[in-house]
Image 1 (cartoon, helix red, strand yellow):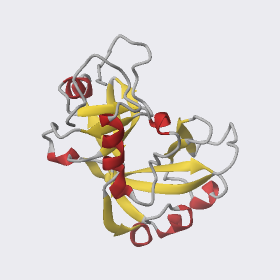
Image 2 (cartoon, helix red, strand yellow):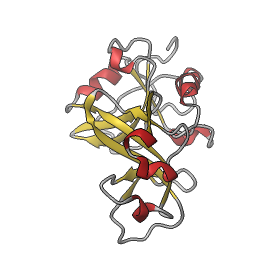
Image 3 (spheres, helix red, strand yellow):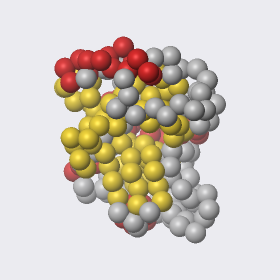
Image 4 (cartoon, one colour):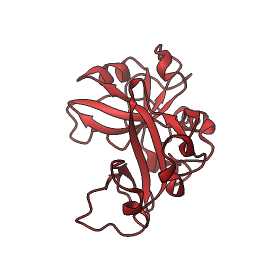
Length: 202
């Protein structure tokens, strides 16, 4: 199975999808990374899912520790604005329509995942979210840049829902994510489109 970027396809937005760095991607910032795309339109924005740091949540934002997923450390979200923080979490029950501290990026039942407004008081999110993960910095692409990298074979695009629940963006064992996603890509599982750069020998 192969991958094709289809810019005129109305379903080609990559928001909520998974990017898997291929061995052809030269940028060392993304060597063997798995990225969750949070926004894609005029450019793209996402976070690297599999680069935990040695900095613990308790060291830097101890107030959030009760809501944090394991391992309870800060993750490198990407090379852009590393002093900025992005929080991802799962909903912990039905969401109130008027709450403003949490917005869903992935809304498929049983796989919901969203962005947490970290300017909130943690107590405001208790009972609203769980399995919080905090990322330092993010991954960003200017208009057309990500599309070009995909066309060049640098990234494989996988639909997270094709993993039948086995792929967990907030896994407690993030070191397994790249091998897991790469194996899925090599078998064609979850690849978004066909008739483009081959995913063989990823």
